[in-house]
Image (cartoon, rainbow, N blue to C red):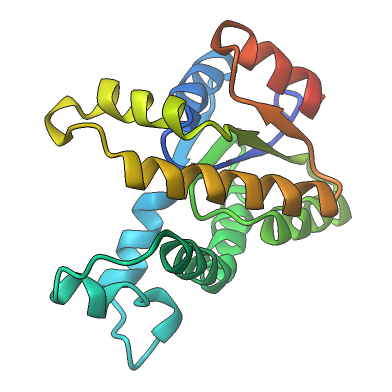
Length: 199
């Protein structure tokens, strides 16, 4: 098979905590393919309507009127959307396991429940599916990350607060499912800590 410690690595976590950079680094090290699950999310949203799949379009009504939602409501909608996307996440993993090239699948909408199921399915098929969730609970750090990544968008403090809350929720769920949770900081040691967690 491959020389990597995994055939598929699921890298979950909230927005703005470094998943994409880490996925690119690990993929480069292991000659792996990167799947950005956010691209899959946009693809399935584009080919469905709210009537066909309401769980994928929970934010649509608010976007149309440019409504400001309270943070707890945004968090609830984000969690519900992630749950609705679980079959898509499992479909991506199953497809990647048909290819003899290792893959890192990363994204905000990967849930610990779907990741745990993918790990079990992989083991049953004799394949090495691993999952890890990055965690950053400091909204100020996430806001700084957003500012560095998207300087034209400004500070984005509210978005960062929601992301920190989402990160905490994902970390709780990951631990409940027996999946490793790795702090996003310190960044210089993140890759090695993820390697240890997924060995």
